[in-house]
Each structure stands twice: as C-alpha cells, then as structure tokens.
Length: 253
Image 1 (tube, helix red, strand yellow):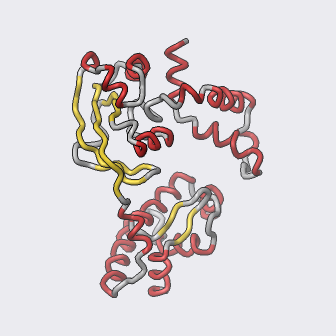
Image 2: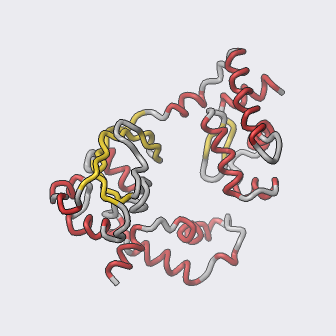
C-alpha cells in the first residue's frame, strides 16, 4: 500500500484536480466527467499536500517540475533532482522550459542508486528515504543525477513583445508560416488561427478547438508552434495574439 500511495502522490492528476477545482466557476462543460470517485480522489490528494510538497516532481520519468519545487529552486533550497530514465530528457549545458522560466541544466550524470547520499537528498529537498522510495517506484531505466542552475529569461517573452518588424522580419515570419501551412494535411491554417485568437482572447482551448472541428490536443499543439515564433501568448484560460503577432497581421492582411 505504501508504494501505491507514493506513486499516487507523485502523479500529475491534472484532469481530475482541474475538474474538482473548476466546479464552482461553471467552466466545466462536460458534467459527465465529474464522478464521485474523481472528486474523492482529488480531495484525498489535497489532504496529502504535506507529503506532496516533498515529492520531487510530477513524474519519475520526465523532467516536469511541480510549482512547489520550482519555488524551492528559486529560493535556493533545491538545486538537484534525480530521475529514472531509459534515456535522459535533458542534457548537460541545456535548458528546461518551466512555468517559472528557462531553467539551466548544469550537469546530467548517470549514477548508482546506492551512491546517493543524505546530502544529495537534502539538496533535492527530500529525506533520503523519501527520495529512494520515489526512485524505486519502477525498476526500468537508469538513475540520473541532474544538477540545476539558475533561471534565465525565456527568449520567447522578449520576442513576443517586439512589434518593430522590418520587411525582412515579415518575410521571414511568413516563410515560416507558409512552411507550417505546407506541412499540414488540413491546408493553410496559421493566419486563420491568428485571426481566431485575436477575435477570441482568453477563450478556452477546448471551445476554440470545437469551433474548428479539431481535437483539443491538435489545436493546442498548433498554437504552440505559433507561440514559438513569438506570435501568441498563453493564458489560463485561452490565448491572445502577442504584440508581434498583431503587427504581423496588420502588415499582411
């Protein structure tokens, strides 16, 4: 039972918890998803918040980091994490995009689980017992020690605010958009998406996807491509067209 509880405490129960959280606001449009079991499970997880704060991240096999862990990194209380991977998802000298910004990855090292010390666990914000319990949830894969650096500015933030587009900038952006359009089996979509988001700021992704007859994940993945170009901004809920995106639309339409 202890292993199962530990596993649940480290799971990202995003769907279940969001259902419970959004009930009072009336945002949920699919009541059939709200089952007593889901609500109870969300409440159970909330009651375990004290233990969840010590959970090293959202997943043993990814580098997703919970907000409480990101806050600890910012405060300087955590500068090390451990993961069990078949293949590392981050690399030495790389960066990781998080809710708190771009996090520098100082070093990724393959280690023996027996080599992990109390001091290592402390740097990861956990007791050694809790850390080993976390890593032993699965036997598949190797254990990696990931040393974290500092947060740096996400270049997309500065990019999306830059609306001083030269003719070359416009040409380059349109070339990228045309390439995305050309790779789509649905045909041209990029400018249509930008116009849709401009006319519907802060509207839920599910609602916008439904209007287009698309799966939500497909819609969000396409918007993410526009965000990489600095053309959109994500909110909760929905999106808006960035100053850069608005200027591009003004210039090409």
